[in-house]
Length: 164
Ligand code: 5GP
Image 1 (cartoon, rainbow, N blue to C red):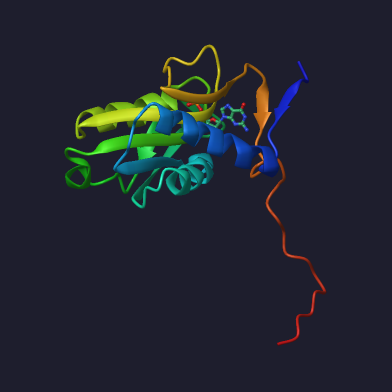
Image 2: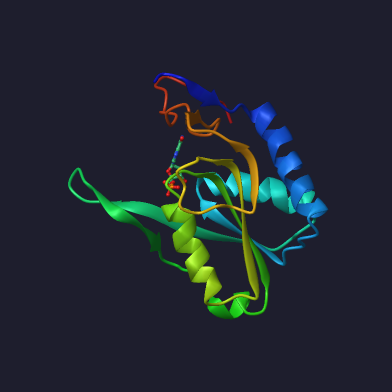
């Protein structure tokens, strides 16, 4: 199918406020927002302001890619968060989408070993996700275009002379 869920920056701004409102209404007051880079960083930043939480952490997760292959499971890249920083804390994991849910499950399981309580917030969740997040802005089964990754990286232009 060539149907796409197109998230724009303006709609993202609304989505992250609505997601935060749902979390606030539920009475969950996280001590730490743990973002999953890179897409989750946008979500975590918005939630941190909306929930008035000044403690943001970051974890890098990638599906390990060999020579043209992707392994079955994602891996957490170093540095992994310090378990001591997390002990007895209420953590909110933030990501852009739970698709297979494997990425969120990896981070969620890591947190379970170290924290008082952990919940997850995503903009999108797909119906086949093996993780059901506590807070979801919208359910979809389409491929999502995110505003931060829909365009390729910028490349240096030749002949751009910038005066000091
Ligand atoms: P997972 O399958 O582990 O839940 O998702 C892993 C990562 O794949 C997501 O964090 C996201 O970066 C990427 N991904 C999964 N589904 C989509 C999608 O529909 N659109 C885009 N742009 N990325 C996706």
